[in-house]
Image 1 (cartoon, rainbow, N blue to C red):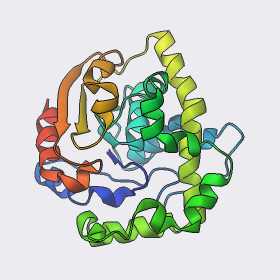
Image 2 (image 1 turned 90 degrees about the vertical axis):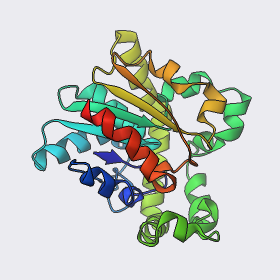
Image 3 (image 1 turned 90 degrees about the horizontal axis):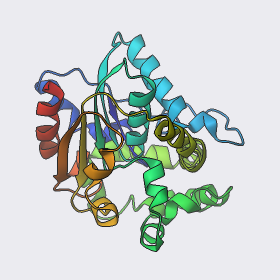
Length: 263
């Protein structure tokens, strides 16, 4: 199971999925709840319909429908938070967890100094009512830099087209923002409860991050943080890419995933 991040859709994996299939894996790439062509349920004051717990339930239900009671989950960016919640809430279902460009949400927030707030300001802007949706939908291509020279080629034409369709839909934009609002509230609370109860990810875990992004600059080696959330951390390291590693460095990413998933 490959889970994308913001503002991508399932098609972000178009260079990775065929390589994993060639290595002998069955691959499922859904759009997360609220993203791409997925559902956009009505929200609530606590934003729980867009919680990672709700999304994790989607993932397990989807895989069971497809006949997979046990599966590995790989998540990037926002998808990593869903992957973590799936592993914590459904330990009997998840065989391996790979977290890409991510530490748990509560760990980000407890380290939220001026450097973090400057670099990741969008987390806090997206928490505001209505304004994020108005700003993004006024010029979605400009907000995301989607029409920058070479962008379509770098992403892949079909992936780029799927991305554009998603960000041009105001309902999808609202749902994607709800993901962030849930992150600062119910998702953080769920992680705090896990930590207080001593719950950890019990399956083998791999941590990878983009060398040309800012996760390590902000927080140091992410593996040191993940060591407090796992019982079987299998290492990992940087991938020579920008933030969207599945598009920028698919061969290097798969080279790290294949031996991990075999173990």
